[in-house]
Image 1 (cartoon, rainbow, N blue to C red):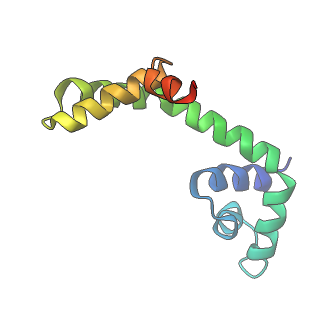
Image 2: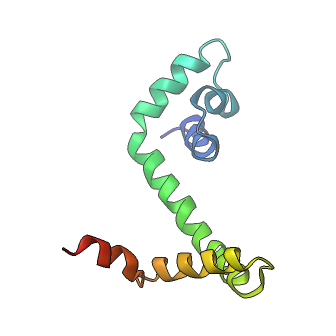
Length: 102
């Protein structure tokens, strides 16, 4: 993989815009739309892996924010929603299980 391709993947994961990612990586503006589309298809697996890593890196901060909302949000509905989300992510959401059972 070249440096340009690596830059394309990195920028595409953040923006989802193939043309702008190609330009940002250093490809010609004239060919960026076509080249971006080609790179997106060529590096589909690498883009998927980079996206998964980016999301995984954000999980601790997301859980921290949910915990803070559950503990200190002024709105009771916001606190309740945050608690439900935390329980769901922990695999403790029984309401879904009970709806699926006959």
